[in-house]
Image (cartoon, rainbow, N blue to C red):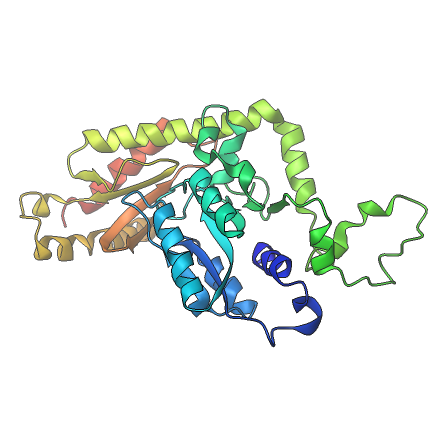
Amino acid sequence: MYAMNLARYKYCPDIKEKGLSGLPRLILFTSAECHYSMKKAASFLGIGTENVCFVETDGRGKMMPEELERQIWQARKEGAAPFLVCATSGTTVLGAFDPLDEIAEVCERHGLWLHVDASWGGSALMSRKHRRLLHGIHRADSVAWNPHKMLMAGIQCCALLVKDKSDLLKKCYSAKASYLFQQDKFYDVSYDTGDKSIQCSRRPDAFKFWMTWKALGTVGLEERVNRALALSRYLVEEIKKREGFRLLMEPEYANICFWYIPPSLREMEEGPEFWEKLNLVAPAIKERMMKKGSLMLGYQPHRGKVNFFRQVVISPQVSREDMDFLLDEIDLLGRDM
């Protein structure tokens, strides 16, 4: 929401004082796999959810740059005013990373603000081994990142990074309250950053991340990312070995999406009846897990795929034995279905 409002202000600075009246139909573009916060932000800011264009993704959940460009041209043809593209680095379900370099090329051609939602995937930048996933992120105008996810800083710990050097954040958000942000204080008033944000009284997220970084060091944070992704890879290989388990796709990050197919379905032809029955398996196993108290594991349907499990590996305390237990427990709870 911060980034969307900032991009709109850059496109039309008068909106801060004159409001929405007289503006053209503003339109923004984001991945069909984006986080639901995009629709919420458009709703809160008066842009309207119907003016969020969802760009189709490829088979791995990545935004298709050629489809983005096609939709931009189409919007202009219809008299709308494109102002923002939101790419995603680490989608919520599949953990996909949009091709940032190609999307940045489209944005530069059309003069659009490029925001990258790297809330989940941004922490891969801490790893020399995995930072390639975010190749091209330096071309973004703004980036959202949540160290409380992969890096496990205390919730909540979120950052908005903005490339602009013209004090755009302050121009956009400043209310210049004279009882708080006096300009004649005895110290450097550039430290009074509160006028750049929506909230005034809030917890200092930056301090939580500073403390985590100070405690673990750069290498420690890198190891946290590398370990999570190594355990994810271990889980993937175990799923491939075990009868009755099937991956949706090879994961790119720490989101492991898979089905458990109980013995009663393993010889069945994969027609409508098979998928209808498989759709019931994950919710039933989840219910058994919760009543037994052994595991908490998410599941969901997704874009035509019936209910599947989604294991996201983050905690540095998780071990290979835990990954084995996860699969053993699913099989134990589901084998009689």
